[in-house]
Length: 119
Image (cartoon, one colour):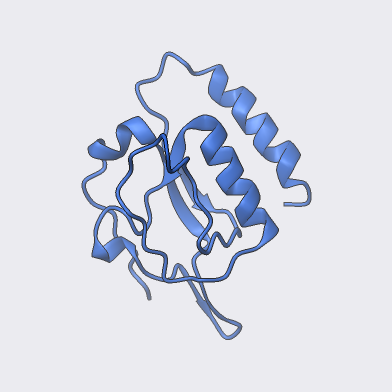
């Protein structure tokens, strides 16, 4: 992704066109490392604690978290159950979490299982 700011601005505009949907779930390889970035506003939003095994963060990860705050969505990885808290990229270059399930905060209770299965 060469310009994450424009990508997320475009994604926000697409989300606004689907206001009739009960919930939108985004899933995929984002190449963003969020580390300990907050994907919610602590004093306002009430979400289960997220435990991320990947402690690294990059600017793409920070941009992702800004997008999540703006859209009141959040990262489900590391929040749903212990099986969702695993590295999603294992290569000769190292371990990372770059694949996410993103859900609206109001729909977190609808996601009851998420598993990261390594090969």
